[in-house]
Length: 291
Image (cartoon, rainbow, N blue to C red):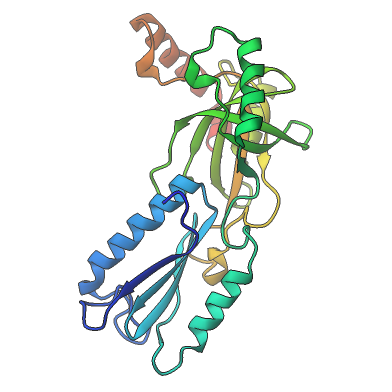
């Protein structure tokens, strides 16, 4: 799943019911529920493991072929094509896919795997600056681009993934502990797909407003904003703008490296953290209504 580019599902003629049929018939036949579930699970696993912006799937159930495209807003399914009577649409899709660049195929151009030599250099930086850190926080794995407070793009290096998204659609929030080379400090990075709705602020904008209004116990924002470039906003809403909400890829950096409340070393620390969360919530009711 870590290396998959285009997903192709092939089933021979007469092997059960197709996952999808033509729109003029029963589009989602009851007998195809298992196939749709398997396809959904496969696409979710690929999106999760590769942090893809979108994924294509070619579903072949002889003689029918269907193209599926999924991003974080919706799953779009093409009409069925009979490959035996007219294979040209399938050939054209494969040609276009092979000619597309990585961003158009769904790979995130704002992140990359750190190569071995570069990782060794950064690891020595971390060990020198923070000699007491545990081993699992010293090995950089992924380079991320994040907008800073000035709107410029900076690069940070993920050393440990804190939470992994388990959904295919929606916010699909992922969090990382990252190393900031210029500042020689660890930070907490949040990667999410926010709903792009009129008059709704992004999470980074909300945190900034909370600080402006003196709300206590709010994370220190080191940077954050929507990512620019191809693939950093969804396209599914173009098929049905009334029912599908557009989403934008958003990243932010926080100065405090977060942990789960159940990992608190003492009950006092755990309840203090919960109390501080309530204090922050009660001090900002009007702002958080728009969150």
